[in-house]
Length: 466
Image: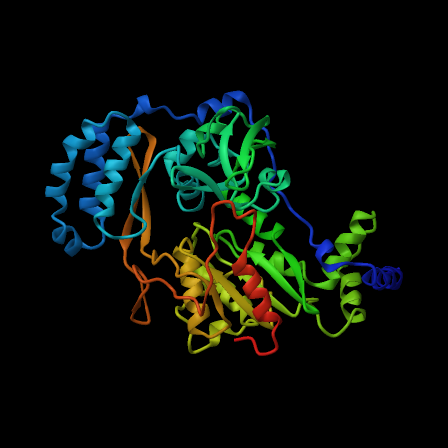
């Protein structure tokens, strides 16, 4: 029986197209009850500006890691001068902007005030603050989520453009692309969270413009609960694909967050012939055992992965944990990173417990940009310092302070830098990681074009890639 399955698998190899074999795992659209959605609503009326402002100032004064910076910027005096402006703000949004302007004077990353109208509010709660009472109270055990379609946007010149699409999400399935301008949602102005509130499990009508002078296009997209940690893991796995170029097979994986490394290793596993074959057979109702898969590995050839090189995309605004950055570097170093003399850090056996020992051997490249931050930035630094391969894109954010969450009045959330991080005496904060090959990716009306990815694929397909 084992031989029959292995032989059938070997025959299947010759009809597989590697690109077509990469399965897309979408963000699971779980419908929530109307009552649960109402509980997760947020009202500006819940915010008392005086209490909020005073709580933020007190938290910063007590917990910000660098007292010298507070003194240098006359923090308490600046806060006292700003307080009347905040209290006189015509709207809560204006007040929040005033507070964040004050916080920005400290010149440190991981320091900002967020409301439930911000993506970061839910991302932070889910990845680093799920144990907070705020998370339990607002979401009643459902875990942090927000209503959305699987996109991130950036405002340019007063217009909203899609600058990230989660692979496998409703937005991805609908054909939304990097650079599309979002004009409206159900006939109302676009906003990242509020435009989709109360609509989970239903569809919305988006009006988008794809070139500067084009007529608006109408797209219908399903609204789902975006649970950040799970959505990022699913999108990382779904991103795995193969780019065929000049006779070379270049693997591509977009790492959406460094909260865990399993999704990255699962994505790499999709490039393994035995895994691809097993998935295709399973779709035909034929399920194989681990022994069958071992037999396939023996029969399909000496090289276990059907790719010649690998592109890892770290572009995006989501960070994670430095230990996970180390695990991913170990994966890209064929499993030897932890024993290398150039490792940027050391982590305990407890931190590494349960980590799968998957690895990739071969040429690779890393994609970075100004939104690559936190743990992703640490990974980029370790990758460059260890000379694993070329980095392409633009300089990273320079945002690697260690932050902590503090719930504030009105269910707002203060993210505050509580420690500075140096790596072998090098300070990434405010500096960032400079790419080996500077390639920009213009946003407005890009129609999905990605010159950074194209340059990386071309470079890795060249025999003298550096």
